[in-house]
Length: 241
Image (cartoon, rainbow, N blue to C red; front, side):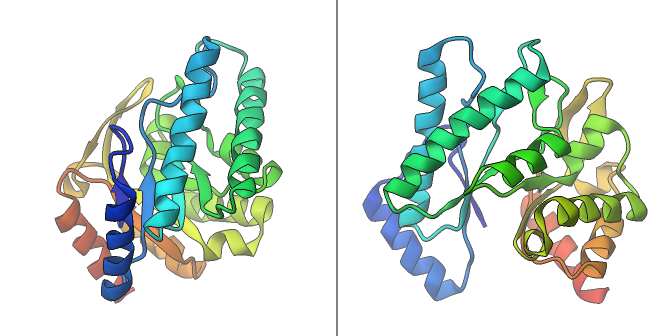
């Protein structure tokens, strides 16, 4: 399960420790999603600093609750050269991971593949960051990438993504994935909104077949509006493959 801190980190250390005990008892693996209010390419230095702090706050509470990783939306292009944005995001993440390592915090940070053209986070950008910065691993939102490109919605395209991940980051990356799946509505500029799987053109069964073929493992988080029903649907289909 992914604990949603998207509107802010509003969990006490005491509650985090209680959650850790419950997760161990129920045998539930936990991750977390950092607040939406993050832009490591902000114009104002104070906003960039606040963005770094939100990621670190999330990592600290995630460590207390026994979570394995933190998913976050890295930045917006703001019409800047994508190469300069990449450098800014990378520099900030190096600062964040160095500080967390100094604190003894080993929670993985996972920049997410994003669904809109205005957002930093193409598949290549995310994989490159994870290859170059220690302490990062990708959060692969397959529906986002489909919405952003209008493609990557067939078995062979899904296997192509998994091959790119393996080529860039090694086999271990496929053994410890963090995946988001949902239905999705999109337009010329990418993602509009998440939808239920049955209401979208996203070929989730083909994705599950590709994951099975590669023996991929890790966490798959359903982000459909009816997340419990669609999560069970994905589980049922996967178990039949």
